[in-house]
Image 1 (tube, rainbow, N blue to C red):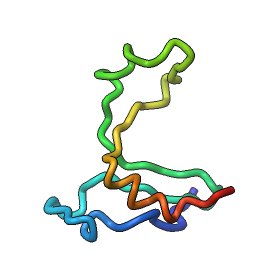
Image 2: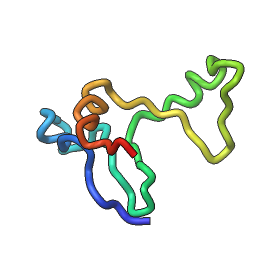
Image 3: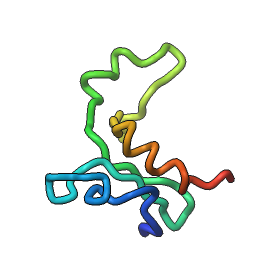
Image 4: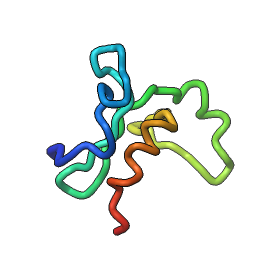
Length: 78
């Protein structure tokens, strides 16, 4: 897997003061998306709706609203 492009603005463009270590969204060469976010699995796993579950290899991550809205314009329709 390889990163193809960033969706939305870079952390620096969004005003990051931490050397760019902020949430980010990327498109991968296989068409999937990679997300950098805060791991909140332990805090939220027990609050998942009854029809949702996570595999052992999956994590629940939070991406700021600002990050996702900045990426929205770059997310393809199909």
